[in-house]
Image (cartoon, rainbow, N blue to C red):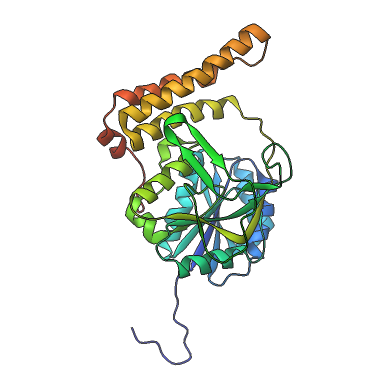
Amino acid sequence: MTVSPGVEQRVGPSVVSIVVNYRGLEDTIGCLRSLLAAECPRHEIVAVDNGSDPEEASAIRFAVGPLVHVIRSERNLGYGGGANLGLRWAIGAGAKYAWVLNNDTTVSVDALARLVAAMDHEPRYGAISPEIAAPIGPEAPRGVWFAGGTIRLRRVITGHKMDWLPDGKMIVPTDYVTGCAMLLRCEALAAVGLFWERLFLYWEDVELSLRLRSAGWPLGVLPGARICHHAHGSVVSQVAQYHYCQNAILVARRHEGRVGALSAFVWLSWRVARRWLACTLRGYRPFPIFETRGLLKGASALGRSSAALHSDSDVRAHD
């Protein structure tokens, strides 16, 4: 196509930032405002209201104005499902990268530009994360919440590295990238698909990370690119505990086969049994009823074929 002199050719965004909101209006607005201040060219922002009260989507529009695209889902699709709405918008807009962020984060003005520059320089990477700070506490004893992660899927263990990385411009490899701040290459998403919506809550970032790595897309963390995760403590709801146990087994079944899923089931069963003993003998509360239900629900995956798990993956990059 020929462009007349003095007429700027319209191109899509280089990067689309995606923030999923579910009844977290104050945090979401703070995150969006920090993104609006980010120094990154060709940057667009999408806020996905994931089944909150209708007034929340209107409040987001009022607070941040027309520079943020607001998508509203009538029902809660889970974190992966909500993020996928934004990812499909980004892919449809022609974005090169999509940055999925927790709504309780705020970003430094230069973090996104650093991440994009690193991904441009290292085109083999499928996803990278900034270093993620957090208030000092149980989840971040030295003020670092995530600087890389490790996975031991068969034992249902994921770990965060909690020390600042040495200064440098090179991406540092990691086993997985946390969904808290996941900069994804859209070319890689076209190859492997989006988040697995069946997981609803927990393990969706690990599962997508494993899929990217299996397809030959390395993952990393970029030193010096920093954001803050305003973690709200370590109290986990019973619903979250249900999904944690169920999804750990599903992910192990999908990526480690029946043997891996059985191992995950045994290790989780041991943890849940210890909780039952502590509640019975020492009076701890609440009883781990939801963990037990999630464990039993996840166990149903042991009898399913790997092909069946892949066929219902809900990871299409395009509708």
